[in-house]
Length: 373
Picture (cartoon, rainbow, N blue to C red):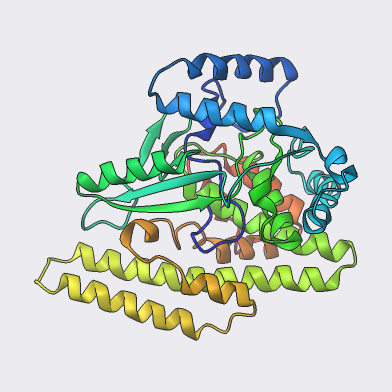
């Protein structure tokens, strides 16, 4: 999942990968026959009363039923101009993604109307005195730091139950959804709300998820997807000769990374606070750390007005901070790795794919960050 302030995509809703329970831990492009089998499994899950996986299956089927070819949407005179502008870029983004060694398959050839500002709502929880996610375990994909719901009311009930058990909770709107290539995911209406620049980054981010995935390692998955999505968006627009869009994509990435540094610093200081014995002033110190972080955020020289507005609305309770900063703390390291590779983004993608199959993906990808490729 992307940071709460991010206008880009989030990974698949926590167990969205497990809505097709036969999904491999390794993202791949699957055959139509395999997709048909997975679809059959979704249908069978729906009959399980009250089951979380039945809820996911229903949501996934709703997405699949809503798909229509992007060509038809572009040909429809009722399609709003802003949506048309973004959708017209999809095929070029898919082509570019293939050239930088991302797995594309049948992804994003269709569009699905979807109400509201989100596809799913993610629930994150932390235990008292902890800044790490309590986590949720799912078959195949292992422990994930969040749990997603297509139904907002259901997400709110889950959060209320967790709070009743003494946990802090955070609800985050997720505008994008991916099945890691197990189905031909469509562009969903909430993905278009930020404009064509963030939309292109979002598509590329999601295609990284369909290319690189490590079970129970959301930090690695998300940091790599964030980094490649940001860098690829800049290069995509630059290749098209759209210097203004390329500059804005770079400013957006720089703004997000600047905010992430503040959040990572706050997160680290809170972790130190919780690790020390409670001297009776813990709560007051925690509140002061949050006030200091708010001041640091206000002082950031952000280039984007949208980034300023989003930074001002960031939630800084423990559950929200459990992810904030962690997902993007390795971006400077990945930037070093890309520099070592001669700014060769496809080489970075291949290195990430190889690292995903090692015992310690982060160490494997970072191993040559300061030495030759």
